Length: 466
Image 1 (cartoon, rainbow, N blue to C red):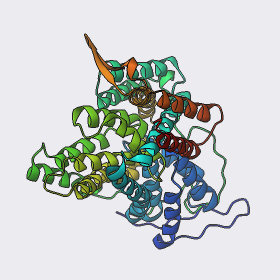
Image 2: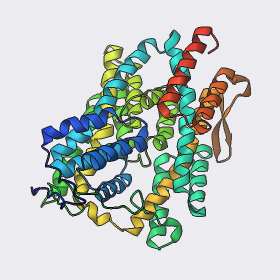
Image 3: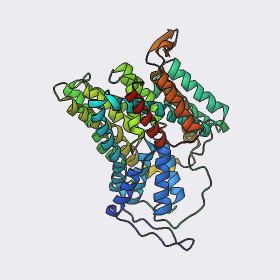
Image 4: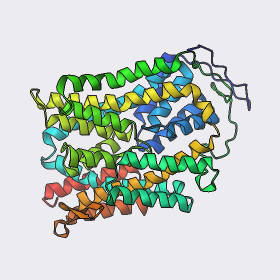
């Protein structure tokens, strides 16, 4: 790596040039961002923009949006990767570790604490009512995500066709999620390379941006670290080893059928295909965790998502709950809570370590992605396919919340779940409809909706109606 100083942009609009900030001085700011990172990636990115661009003026609008465009191309939670990227721009690798690590830390601690409570008391009294209510709220939030992303992503008939095909493939044909991502990306890449208008996509930075400097890191500022000789093999060896070394060690010592080996292998694979945010991959995770591995019961995935929605940090932190429950129920010679804790930490490690790999490996070359039509087309197609995957998630959650029993229907190539009408839960249906009305009619925010549904769920549990 070649160290160079950040040159603050020239004074503009009569405003003082921000003074360079040390790594230690940046810590409180990144901690503040982490503590406020509620509401999914849209809310988290908005918080970062307000603090980093508007308040602190550490990075210009154009540089912020360019970094965000790059992060949308990567597998994994884009908000956490954006924090890592900006931290890298400002203070090199140490800055990226600080920003990205702090972004994950509050959610890690909160989800772990809630996992302990759930494992010990999850089916008892008011705690069961709490999660009963959260499930209804999560349905409304996922439905809102389908519409919000759909409005932005499905601007042409080709994009709408990709979304529909994605839903049919994953819901009716049981096509694996990674294959859907690869197929959509290939279609978009070829369409963008051919110059087809349906695959033109400007990304987050498509809108015109007014200059608003001066900034510590302006449009032309040079980052502290740039790729030197041996950059790629060095980063791959270090971060690839940190990520895959524990996985290979667990498989070698315990065997591939051991729960820790299964968790490490499955979530390492997931880390490479999590395009489109947490909602897109959760259907893949939920179906595998419930149907393939038997780590969770169907409704428990909703409970975990409810935890992630009500705590700071990336929504993909729900996977820590999945890993916790997998090891808690298969503890071997360990105490169940210790086994669950280790399973949750292992899941978080193999989920987020690759995020640092992608950023530290690709950030020095990110300018080469600017204006690449083929890559933009691939991103547009993947985003469209993700809408169909999220719709599948909404349907899957509905089946396992409003109904207590489902059956598998098989007819030729078709294979899908269908509800047993007699198992309809009237209380769950009523609460889910109320959550939908709150979100879409009265535009109630995520946290108030979750809080209200949780309160109603506990009240119903206390009265014996849930």
